[in-house]
Image 1 (cartoon, rainbow, N blue to C red):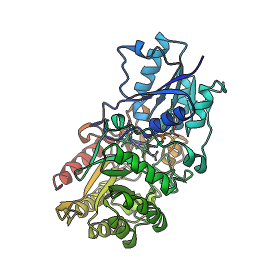
Image 2: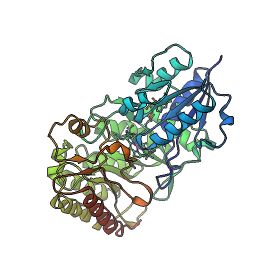
Image 3: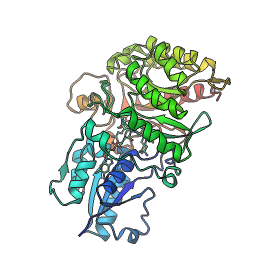
Length: 423
Ligand code: B12
C-alpha cells in the first residue's frame, strides 16, 4: 500500500499560547516528504473526539518535546485502540532524550535525531528496526527543500517583536558550547548556507511577515558568520531578533547587527552569580553578561536575558546576585531603533533536570558533583521552565533551598522586575 503520512504537531495548553512559533521540525519533514513523492499532511490541532478523520493515513508521525509527552502517549493509545494497523512513529527532543520511556510505550518506531532519512526509510517499509537513527550531514541539510511555509499555515503563528510581525528561522543546528543544564551541549554544529537563509527570509516575506526571529543558539558565533548572514538579511530589509552569546559579543558585532536590522537580541545570562555560572560550565562571566547588555543598548538593540533559579549550588546569596543583575538590566532605559525610550526584558524560569543533560546524568548516576537534589521521580512533572501566566514548577532543591523556597523566590523576583518593563 502507498504510504500516506500524517505529521502531528501537538498543542501546548500549558503555555500562554502555542500559536507563536511554528513547528519547524514538522514543517521541514513535510516538505521533504512531498519532494520525495510521498503523500503527507500536517495536523496542528489533533481531534481526539473524531479519529475517523485520520482513517486514510497509513503512518502517524508525532513530534514531541518532553512537556508534551502525556499528549503523545494519549494519541498513541487512542489511535492504536481504534486503528491498530496504523504505524505510529515518535520523533523530536523527547524521543532523543527519553528513549527508554518511548520504548516502553507501543510506538512502532522511535526516531532519534534528524528525521528526514529515517522517516523516509520507515514510510517506504525499508526498516523493521524500532529505533531508527540516520544522521543528516550539513551538506545534505543544505540540499533539502526549504521548510513548508505556505502563508495559510504560517499565518496561524505569529510572534511580535517590538510591534513587528515575526516568524522563526534557524540558521544552524547544534551548539558547540557545553552548558551542563542543556541537552544540546556539545552537539555537532551544522550551518545553513547564507543563501539558504536568504531564501527562507523570502518565504517569510511572501507570507506577509516583516520581521524574523532567528532561533538558533549560535547566530552570533563569530564576526565572519554575522557578516555572511547580515549580507543576506540587509538585501531584504527585514527587522530581526536573534540569539547572542556573552562570550562572542563585541562592539563590532553589535554594530553589524544594528546596521542590518537587528532590533533585539536574546541571550542566556542564566544567573547573576559567578559561582553558579562556573558550576554549570557556562564559560562566561557576570561582567561579560553586563558588557553584552551595555554594548547592545549603546547600539539601540534591546536585550532579553534568560535566567534560571534552582541551578546547582543556589542559595539566598546567589539569588540576591541574580536580583542584582536583574536590577542592572531592568533599571536601564535606552533609545531603540525607532527613537523610543524603552527597557530591556528578561525571563526567569526554574531549572528542570531533563534527561540527557550533564547535571541530570551526574545525579542519576550518583556522582556527587552538583549541589542539587531531585524531587522523587522528577519526570512526573510536566517539565516546563515557564508555563501559563509565567508560572514555574520546581522539581529541584539544593542544600540551602527547598523546592518551595525556590518557587517563592523566583515568583518574587519575576514580579518585582517585570513591573519595570517599558515597551
Ligand atoms: C523553537 C524551540 C521552541 C519553540 C517551539 C516551537 C514549535 N512549535 O516547535 C518554543 C519557544 C515554543 C519552545 C518552547 C519550549 N521549549 Co523549546 N526549543 C526550540 C529550539 C530552540 C528549536 C527547535 C526547532 O525548531 N528545531 C528545528 C527543527 C528542524 O528540528 P527539530 O524540531 O529537532 O526536528 C528534527 C528532529 O528532531 C526530527 N523530528 C522532530 N519531530 C519529529 C517527528 C517525527 C515523527 C520524526 C520521525 C522526526 C521528528 O526531525 C526534524 C528534522 O530533522 C530547541 C533547541 C534546538 N536548538 O533544537 C528548543 C528545545 C526543543 N526546547 C526545549 C524546551 C525545554 C522548551 C520548553 C519546555 C521551555 C519552557 N518554556 O519551559 C518549552 C516547551 C514547549 C512545548 N511545546 O512543550 C528543549 C526540549 C527538551 C526536551 N527534552 O523536550 C530544547 C531541546 C532546548 C534545550 N536544549 O533545552 N521551544
